[in-house]
Length: 385
Image (cartoon, rainbow, N blue to C red):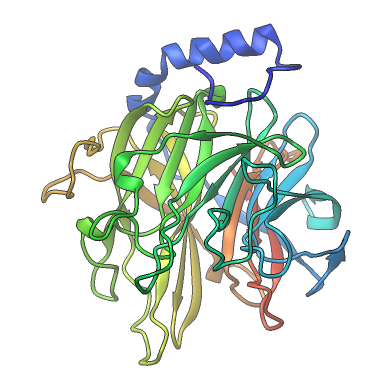
């Protein structure tokens, strides 16, 4: 039942294993369960803080933070850098920080580890063609084992010659060593005329059903599923629910928003998609998703949506998304432009924080500074009622 792995269960308790097995037994029902009807949650801004640019920690530069998760057992956070080993070897950080009624503060990086290839070495600096290039994007704490699962979107080369690097979801022990990989749906594979686009592949992953289910979203539409969003129309990408063994339980169309502005002419095109998804542990089949867009001449827009998969068409057997497909249902909860932020950043990470004394749940967001002096590593705290 568990992920293919070469690691011992160690301290995994019998009770927790039985709990996960029971959850797997009802996974199919959870995938299609209809969420309770009700008004949209209310989201309010708590506060924000930034890390100094170029912060040094244990011989590494803290930056490129594109994914975040919180360990509910300890309150510790884990953050993944999307550094492809240009600055330092691919890695993650642990951190302590406070989220409360007054916002987010007292951020302290507490540790860092390199993410290791199955051969035990660090990943290589691109474009070395030795099978050890990687593009880390998201990290989640396994509710069953306490290990880390992380996504990387691979590489579709712009020209012929360089090797294709396939997207993957990998498992790492807490020391960063390789522990396994999740078999992905066939349509997540990069082929010459099918699969994810370059730099719009696999970022968003989340656990649900006490760790029995893994949900992922392709950041942008697959090549065969149509064009990228424009200012006039959106696009469809894919959301997939899998068991821990990789079995695909369902796949749904996810509707991306149109671009929020018409792009100015120039060498760079717009970049829009889903960098993070987070399961609502209280309501099966419900998620919270970030959609992040950058448009030349208009900068960034980041929106938070509530997503329900109940009633959506199962498209796992559709090579090309057909007309009339029923996508997942979305409703807008927040546009970061509506909050008192000094600037809208390249926000890519999303996790649950602690509950407030009011009973509200908190969300913690983190932005990727792209290791650029004019961008920011920013933590944003929201309250959800």
